[in-house]
Length: 309
Image: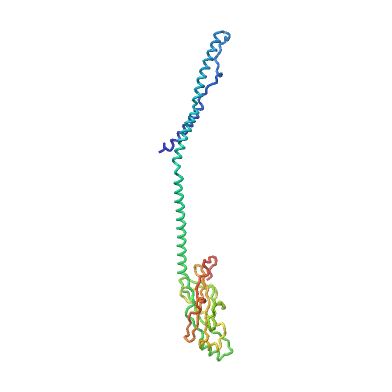
């Protein structure tokens, strides 16, 4: 395994080293670099003949060496061999890596699919968490309504008798009521506004004309009525009005709204409407959806608003 991995690299280094060594091979000397030694007696016949023979012999040897070197230069052949090995190694490298693009393409596609699945999983988890949170806030939220224990502080007959004896005395019909939390968590009452009309027909549209009966930010525990609270009629009672109520020509219509918050920082609004039946001396819900409703007026929690208890 080591030879397969490092063999080509070692071979390349060996060829490169051989090329460097080849550059140091002795080159043929120029023909005139070394001349034969001439005898001191240059004028003698023997000296001249040796000089001529030595020069001719040296020229013949130099020519033979130059022709061999010009035909077979070691450095050139080393470069050819090196380039051959380089071509072979490059071809092998190409064969080993030409399929990587298709393989990495599959990996990229798998990564994209995994990312899509992960995003879907995150969205599903967020949706599940939202559903769980909504279920918790819906199941555990408070439900504040008017309790059915509504009654007149003084009956219509008693008020009629009082007005008969005290015609100049101004008095109003008063109703006593309770509010109760039917939910599982405490409610923080922000505002409670009530109005009681003496009418022959329930107004088509709800108009809040009363003043708050209790200060804001009163906490209400589960199932414990808060009260008694009181609301006065919008007009003073008279003997004629009392007779109209007793005969059924007119009736008392008690309505209002409650604004409160829960421990999850959501704010709600509850509306109510109750009609008084004098002959039966009972209060029953009336006014339809215009007066009787329950809604979430803050879809998102008001996190920045602190509670006041």
